[in-house]
Image (cartoon, helix red, strand yellow):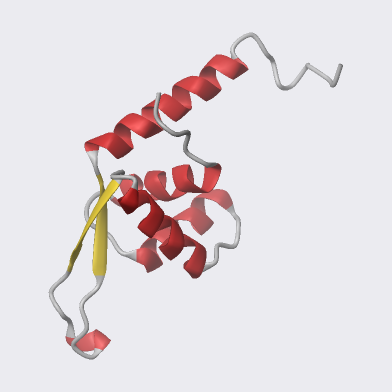
Length: 109
């Protein structure tokens, strides 16, 4: 079993997968905010992207420079097979913990 993914790491990986392809930070922030209703600090996403890449769960490359960015390129990321495997594992762990519980009827014991 590999190191468990944190909740925000999962949100970032899932946002990238929803955006389907090589994407950069701003659309990832927007996707998380749109789907969760939470405000997301762009810096938190960039730090998480770097950490996920170090873990081998993302790969990145620089895009072609664009005039709209003053000739600067963007760092685009995509989820690796290891990232997909980690997401599946995280979901299986949570599904296992939820099994047999009805969150609408159970109260604190």
